[in-house]
Amino acid sequence: MKRILGIMGAMAEEIDEVKTMLVDVKSVEVGGRAFYSGTINGIECVVVFSKWGKVAASITASILIGRFAITELLFVGTAGALAEGLKIGDIVVGQRLVQHDLDARPMIPRFELPLLNRVYVNSDVRLTGLAVRAVSKLLDRGVVQVMGEKNAKEFSIVAPALVLGDIASGDQFVNSAAKRNSILSELPDIQCVEMEGAAVAQACYEFDLPFAVIRVISDTADHNARIDFIRFVREVANAYAKAIVNEMTLLLD
Ligand code: SAH
Image 1 (cartoon, protein in one colour):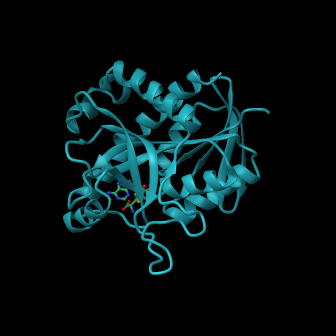
Image 2: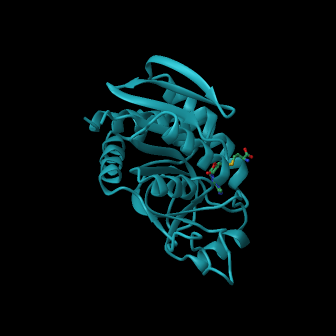
Image 3: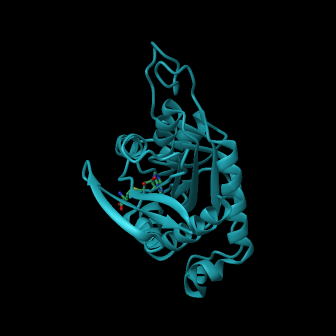
């Protein structure tokens, strides 16, 4: 079977940057989304902005799978840190994904995916292993090379950590200590919070498709979140997304 890598990003700025790497690019609009096909480092890719939230992301993933016949899916985006010690600029590669706002009690236990009998969806071991290798290679080269000295200094990013761990998704931008702590009290092992990963994970699980999620920490999911977030995406996240996709496609053969 021919390999086609789907690449989804949660911010238009990140996807714009990844798009610049596509060779022989063609674009098609489906369901109000622009899908860009071409090759990156010789790998066939379809690149698309997921739009925000779980529903938007699952629609986008379903189109990539059904219409573009992708064989694997990589999600790149930003996330708010939940785990103690995670800093802005650190990278989380998703091991398990969970929807922190899913609650169909009393019929179904809290967080459990209806009719799927599971709370967590595991990312693909091979693809996630490649994601870890790709991110490690990138971080080994140093942050200045990825985002420039000015940005590294401005966001105090010195030596970003790479964490392999669990990610929670929900339809809310988490920007207060109260919201942050309430998620952590229910799901204490979660590294970071975002709005799409677990939806993409469920779509891939139901279509039996390998996927990986890579999230760069843009904020600490508290009252500073929005201000940090907007500047971070413009200045830093797009550079990370491009470098991550470049390394990842070099590792695929
Ligand atoms: N509404 C925002 C932008 C979109 S939502 C604005 O005011 O500009 C934020 C995106 O970043 C989502 O795609 C989500 O996955 C991710 N994200 C980053 N930090 C987050 C946080 N603290 N909580 C939830 N999602 C976050």
